Structures are given as C-alpha cells and as structure tokens.
Amino acid sequence: MAGWRMESKPITLALARVERGEPGAGDELWQLVYQDLRQLAAARLGKLGSGQTMQATALVHEVWMRLGGDTPPTFEGRAHFFGAAANAMRNILVDHARHKGRLRRNAGEQPATLITELAIGDDGSAVDMLALDEALTAFGKDYERPARVIALRFFAGLTIPQIADLLGVTTRTIDRECLFARTWLRRFLTRG
Image (cartoon, rainbow, N blue to C red; front, side, top):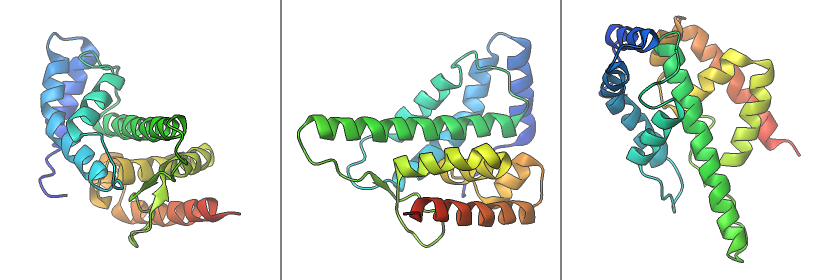
C-alpha cells in the first residue's frame, strides 16, 4: 500500500502511554493512526459494490469509538491494536450490510443480495458480506491466527509484508496462511 507509514516505535510508545493512563495519550495515538486507518477504510469501502453509502471518515471514527475512543483499552502492541481495528471494521461493515438488508425488506422491496468486492482471492470474485462474516467466524473457531491474517488482509487492507511485520513472522508464513484460509473459505462459501 502506497503511503504505508505505520512506524513501530511511535505507535508502540503511544500505546504504552495509553496503558499507563497518561493524559493526552489517547489523542496522541489517534493522531498517529488516523491517516493509516483512513487509508485502510477508504480501500475497503472503495471495493464495496454500488449503492455504498458509508464514508471512510465515518468508518474510521466508528472504529475508533468501538476501540474505546480517547481512552482505548490496553493493547499488547501495534499488531494487537491493528488487529482489533480490523475486527471492528469488519463488524461495522457487517452491521451496515445487515441494516441495509433490513431496510430493503422493510421497504417492501425484494431483498437484494448484499455483494461486496472483497475478494477471497485475486480473481476479483464478489462475496456476500454476511456470508463472508459467517465463514470467517466458523474459520476463526479452529484457526485463530489464519483468521486474524484474513481479517487484517481483507478488512484492514494490509499487504502480506505489512501483516508479517505486525505479527512478527515471515512473509512465507503469511502466504501459506492466506492460501490455506482462501481454500477453506471458498469451500465454506460454495458449499451446497
């Protein structure tokens, strides 16, 4: 991702200050992560199908509020923080898709399939957001780290090297986990 600037040390230091309860630490953390979170949100929203009404700024602010706002909970480091942000982003997008589906049904219209452009591969295939959430939930019960990798990849929009850096593993490990997860998720999503 162009413009990736999630520098380890400043974010890690800000997270430590938040953990110690230092005044203004939450604001400092917000300043350090805002642009990165906004880029990630814009990338995710840019891949949603037509009719998308949520804005990147609104998504980032909702993520921040779900993470605790100016007094976020303790995070073990930036990998934990961005993992939590990816999960929050996923939950918000799924909630938004559910809400849109309810509005459509309540308006007397035939419920349309809620399609996103969140591909499970590089082939550009579209996936129903609610089905993807169900699949990731089932997958995460047995395969915690690969599920986390997929959340970081597809909901936070991080690249393989960025995820490897955040999790402290090699890019080969992340590649293997992505391949395994995509295979498992495709089977789950295409089951009869």
